[in-house]
Length: 145
Image 1: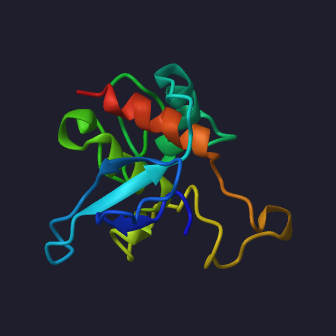
Image 2: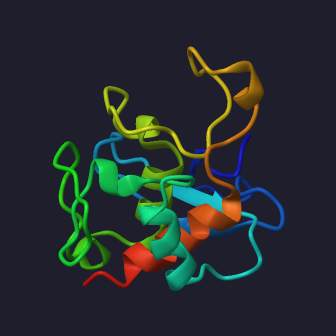
């Protein structure tokens, strides 16, 4: 199981050395889910903002808008106030692999390497964002209240 997988919240199911936060559960027939990370260095909001706007990293601004950041896309939902609507576990799951929650989502799975289609040979087996970059983005999005 990868760090970003959504796993049932039962005793003994969390990966060893993982920091797990309660995640999104309502659509999964009452099963509480947890999104985990093995990153030991806390996410840095400033680095997370850089990943969010960087063309060479997440480039999230191509689809999402946030007040004061330009350019901004309109394909995905606006993210103003997202830190007051979603906790860190919920944000982590969406950034790492939104398709675990919404299989029809057009947002890329930024930290999934399996089950992808049409991936250039140079990028196969490599996530778009590292675990630390995901944590940095989560830290920054959490500040948007």
